[in-house]
Image (cartoon, rainbow, N blue to C red; front, side, top):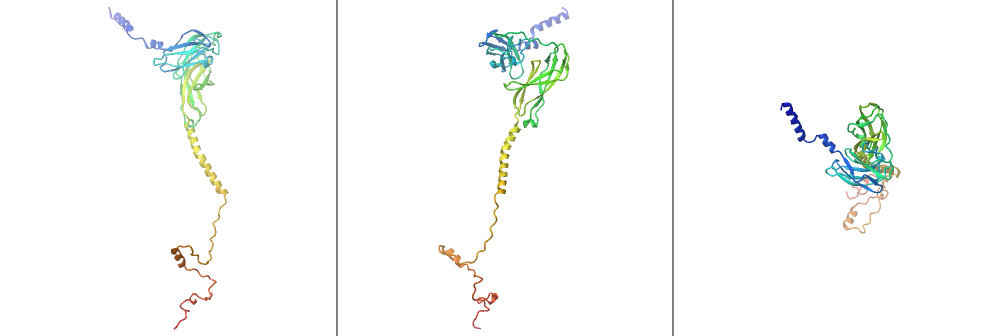
Length: 350
């Protein structure tokens, strides 16, 4: 056996011994959905089971119309949303849940649609017939260009100081789309929706200026804006031609600046009102004038009745002032030395 034959035999043996390729394994691990029955009437139920999902993932199960597994669901507007059920996969990515059968708002063909409610998007469908519900052929898709997402979507941008004080949060939805149709797509109009929690999205049409040729691709950038003061977990959804192209979660922080503002207002405003009220009171109330000092005329000695001996002695020791107009032995015009009690006027023996 020559060297070339030996190499061929070695390659064949290695191909048999080596594990399957990564592409085969990933295909086997794709999310799948199985039903306990292919048909049931309204009011009944069907058991839905699945495998290959992300561990501990939250899924939503719905009965949808105007859809087949090959084309997918044409938005949640064609599903019986009120009768849907939520289920969480186990550690191996499996689940089992009983789903009530309800008529979707559009005719069949119908499917049981399973999709992730949080995290990376994944979905799978299983054919199902609602007994007694109308069946109509699917609407023909318009010939021409058809866009599909080629890369994962993302939201570019960040919050600024004004957003911290309640200004609207803004982002840019960035993705790459490819034209898998037979004709070019010129100036496509996309629908961008933002939803909070379990509420329905608020849609806004945005036109992208440009042309995507058949087999070509283009980078799409669309602005997304929330209402002022919005916070919490949001989801940005992109639709084109009635089909959902992408979904992107958006966690918006709480505007703590607004809370700080109201706390300061609750402290500063009452203090300012109090100061203004006190200033007004000072202006309105009459001002009091200082009383004039009264001159106390000399009078009789205070009565010492009822005083203690020590206080009586102190009051009695004080000299009582003489009245200026009552001095019988003194001439008002005389000097101080001519008073009868002065040594100069005192009579006595020489």
